[in-house]
Length: 268
Image (cartoon, rainbow, N blue to C red; front, side, top):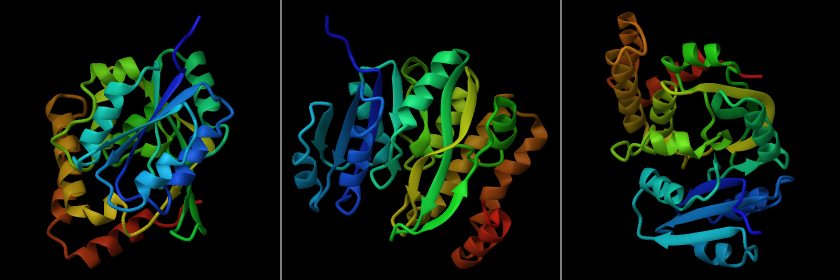
C-alpha cells in the first residue's frame, strides 16, 4: 500500500546557482528520508535550472515559473505539499543530516506544539563560521521575544501543514517579513518551540533579503507588531515595539546597521 511522504520540504530559489545544489543535496541526504522536496524555481536566469535538472531523485519536484517573489512562491510550494509536516529551507542554506528526524520526533512527542525551529550556525559567503544563533526554546520565552524580534530561523522550522493552511499560508501582501507575520498568527492557535541543537547552517551575504530590502523588512515588522497589539495578543504598552522599526526607517542606512549591530552584540 503506497503512502505519501512524512515531511514536505519547501524551497524557493531565484538565481541560486552558487548554493542551490548544496541545499538540495542536504535535504535529500537526511537520515529521515521519507520526504519530498518541492523547489519553486522563481524565474532564475542563471544556471539554477540546469543544476536542478541534474538531480536524479524521485523525491525532488521542481516547478519553474515566472518570477513572483518569495512569498507567492512559498504558497505555491505549500499548495503542492502532500505531507502532514512541512519544513522550510532557503536555497542558500544547509540542513544538517539529523534535522528532520529530530524535529519530526519532537512533534510526534509533543502534539500541543505546532511549530518547531532550532539553533543555527551562521557562516559568511565563503563558508567561514561567524556565530551560532540560539533562539529562545520554550513557548513562554518565544512569546516574550516575538513582539520584540523574530525568534525563529526561517530555514530551521518544521510545522504542521494543517495549521499553516488554516492560518491562510504566507501573507502575499508582504514581500519580506512573511515568516515573522506567520509566526505571530500561528502563536494565536498553537504552542511554539525551538530545539537547542544546531540543525541548519545559515549563509549570510549581501543578497539575503534582510539586507537587500531592509526598509521593507522594517515596515513589515512595524505592521506585524501593531496588528498583534491591536488584536489583543499583547498589551497596549507593547505598541512601543511597533514604533521601534518605524523610527529606524528615518535613520540613514549606515547608522541604522551600526546601531543594530551594537544592540545585537556577539552571539555564541
